[in-house]
Image (cartoon, rainbow, N blue to C red; front, top):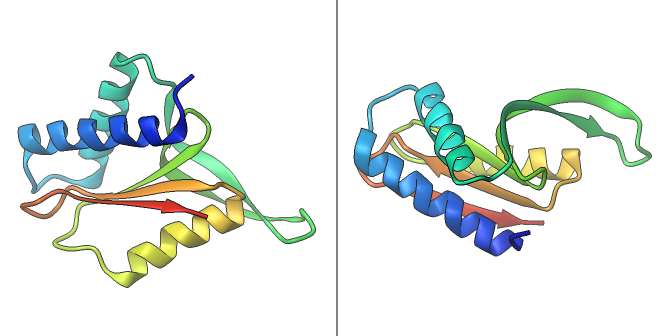
Length: 122
């Protein structure tokens, strides 16, 4: 089993290869499918649009959200296809991580001429 930092490196490298091939200008769904496909080819457990339950501090379920990509049941990947990442995107993934009780997340933007990747640890 890969440690989380190795897993993040693989996701980062795979995202870079996708960006080199597809460039920017596609919808988020295209990049999501490409990332899921390529990670599965590498033998990594990955799912798309996985519902994660948002819990209150006492464990009471408050609702669900769908993570773009969930890697190895421990890494939340949020995909964007925008000109540039803004604070709202960072707040979004941090909120997802806290609410879903996950420790590791990545925010990846394929929409700019230069790939943007940010790693988050709670």
